[in-house]
Length: 284
Image (cartoon, rainbow, N blue to C red):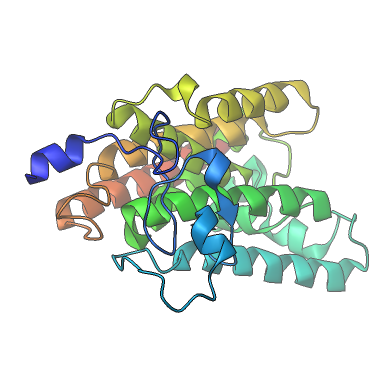
């Protein structure tokens, strides 16, 4: 099969051929639908690998990214470590008003005063156990799927774009609020997967991603206290980054490689998010 025809191929679940998917097993590399996904310590596994990982005779397809989502796990570990530091400092799992939040959360005033690092640090701070649990579950599922499909460098750039554009959106729509949480980054991963689904000719609403996105958008607008700007900004940042970086998936000869042009374009997008955040802060 030629490279072009492989790139254009729509992947289907190996157990349910009528279901299109972008997610593959992190152990054997076979493509699986949402019904067949089993969360593992690293990535997502198919039913066979999840149920028989101890079997020594199982055939394994080794390809870039198939052995684990290293960047995804590193991001989760970083978030958890920061949250543990918050717990130690505040002494309460539900306390948001501690020094780490005050020094790392993002708002217009502090960013306008030159504390630009908050555009990134806010994504590693959470307001409580439920907050971090929900975000880390989303990061685990979506991040591992994206990293397994595109490779670690491109997944990291997409997440970085999502984070900074999410912070910019939070400042733009809620300049006086101190915003924390990885939800902008998680929404960006969701947007990236939707773009990749579209790129491969899949109907988004027929996949599991469409309803999940709609449900999260409903929650974003319906539940008080959620950063609408952070979610929408992250969604846009991840979607645009995926449009730039998402041309080469697992079946393509360029899988796992980040070309200088694509990398530079993604870095420009990340820098653009930082500039947008600073600009929004000064306009507030």
